[in-house]
Amino acid sequence: MDIEKLKINLADSGCNTDDSDYIVRMCSGGNMREALHMMKKNRCRLMEELHEKGRKVDCLDYLIRETEKEISKYGGI
Image (cartoon, rainbow, N blue to C red; front, side, top):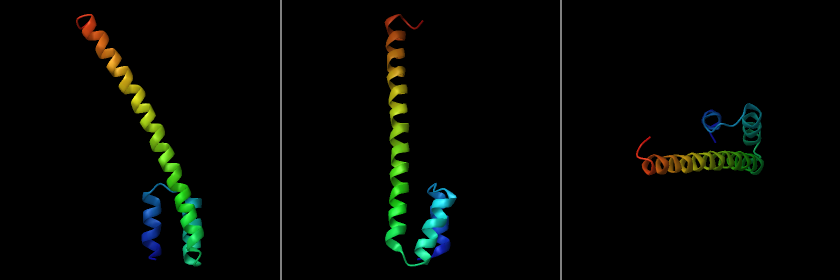
């Protein structure tokens, strides 16, 4: 595995420095299973953040729909 590309991709994916350094050490040392485990752990964290943002967007969408209903109900106050 190209270590420089790995470092760039880990940074681009939002891995923090400690996790990124750990993954690079594991790959460099041949412990690919542990590196994979840490990558999957970071992926899970990112997915949870994505879902949280999605819930926030859903809340705003609801408020927008309700506000639009109120505007049309009262003739565009």
